[in-house]
Image (tube, rainbow, N blue to C red):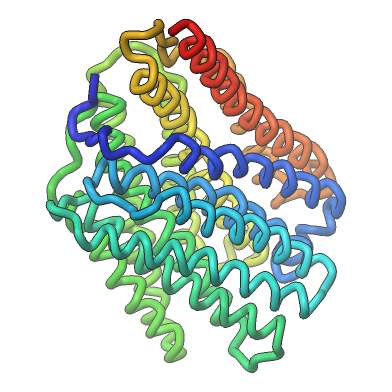
Length: 430
């Protein structure tokens, strides 16, 4: 039972991606604790230490953990290229990434230059290993599919994001002289669009038709979206560094339109799915894509109507829509596809002909997935409300985010527990 297009015989050991997947929800809970501790004052400005710590707990602690874990699994299985010594590579990425994220958040909250220096070293090591390993693998891909093109572009986006992040670490840790506002803006946009959107687009090109039985993406979008967006990002960055305000705004409009095309096309494909059996993961995809469309619409609206709302509020809404709404929701949903499937696959490989293997719905039933999805949606809506009116909505948003993150971790650990029980029982029966 190998899904079409997957080379499962090349899959790395289960613990390679799982360590990232089980760690990630912990950072959602930590982010909720920061929000709960600092309260409504956190929304006063995105430049304060607490919101910067919160942002990196979400982007590095939650998003990057899962995205890197997914790449370690996806490159050999979907693209057909192996990452050498995957357990060593995973350890050399996971530990520095986890410790570096915690150290960076602490450095923001405590205002510690030493903390920024240590975090820069740890994160530089973790991402350096990841970029070298992934690029060596993906540029050897035997077939240059739309997914391969998008992953190559996304890794380029990650390289730019990490480089800019290390420069910012130099500013905070060593007093490096930088145009801090411009570099921070570039760092954020390359991270959210050049890395996150392009990687999700590359993965969606494979998993949306495969898992949800939809028509394939149009060839022009599958193969052209990521390169075009990467070129537009580079153009936008050059114009921003050159202080070409009107041209930068027009390039930003083009980026927003490109994002809207990808989101709208994916929603259209999901509405054409041929499998009519209910799938709770669809809700996560729809939350994600609607958030992406909303962020593009908000950017376009404020570009043409700058007096629509205060820019500080727009920044918060865009950040929440892109990080919690778009990236967080799709990552959450994909974890519910990936983890039970990997548990089932590795049990099949180890217990074939020896014992009965639980099917995926036994490993993770629909009910807890659906309920946690409602909790995540409530957290997203409360965070958006808190960005507009912090005094009323901040504490409920923090509690809802913590609940959604903790619930996700409980569900994933439940799969791991059932996997271990089934494996022990099956091996003992031989």
